[in-house]
Amino acid sequence: MLGYLVNPKIGAAVYNAAHTTVVYGPLAACGYLSGSSVVVAVGLIGLAHVGFDRLLGYGLKYPLGFGYTHLGRMGKEAQ
Image (tube, rainbow, N blue to C red; front, top):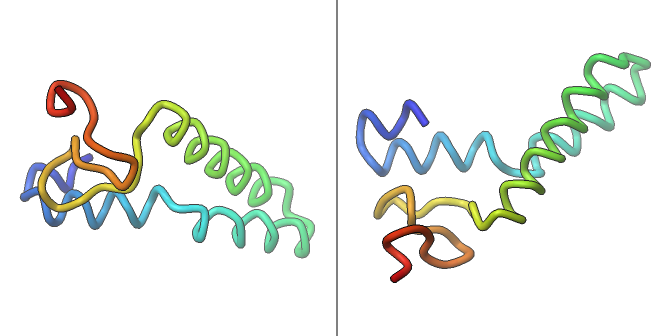
């Protein structure tokens, strides 16, 4: 969210980098394979967070602004 203080393009890039299963799935797998329960937990928590965000309609962001997502427009902007 801090990236949006710079501008919407940077905000969207930072948000999308942190809110994708491509990050957390392999992290959980690496933790499992290495036997690190902390890394598994972080990966699974990240996957749950991303899934819950999608459930609430918070998709990956477009550089137009926070409310413009790959799932459609959200909030006041959706009306």
